[in-house]
Image (cartoon, rainbow over all chains, first blue to last red; front, side):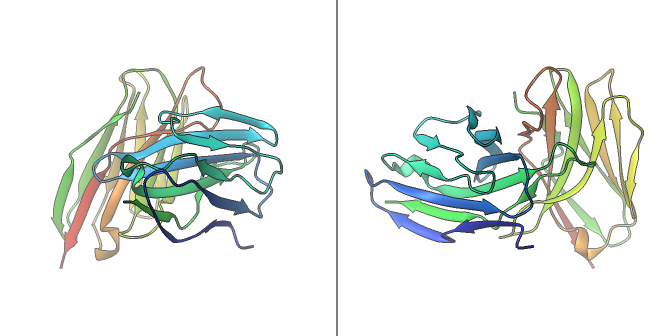
Length: 114
Length: 112
């Protein structure tokens, strides 16, 4: 199993550009989420999904969109990039039916917005 | 609401012990603990559930005080490999299953 994969690993955008961060998992997990990590702020939840077709907002959803058309994929779209969105983005997945309900994190995408 | 971790940073010599605390102002259903090495993704250590018992993982253990809505992570006889940033993630009673809110992290440095 590849686990949770994210692409790209690094990305530089100009202010106003849009892009999609990709996240995929091959563990058949129902729950997937997106976090951003900034120095001294820990991990902050952007959006999450409890299954295909179901998404909800986390703590910091503004400027981001998500959709979940399949169990495997959970892309994060930046609509109009801003310097404040410079961060490291982690995707995670978990299976509510297992114990312990640990979250498996992808390797992260380091995004810089100029 | 983000849980509060303390201390913000800890410096140890190999073999010393440390305690990291995580406090919430709201009723907790579960507390997760993760460790993150520099430049890497967070890795799961353990989970404590409401009404559950203290968990252990090698020389790392944790407890969950439901009355105080607090969890503590105990690192015993620290090793160089314990260095990293430790995060607690909390699930609140009555919220969506699996929705975690993380603390700001505690940086642990172990010196030889």
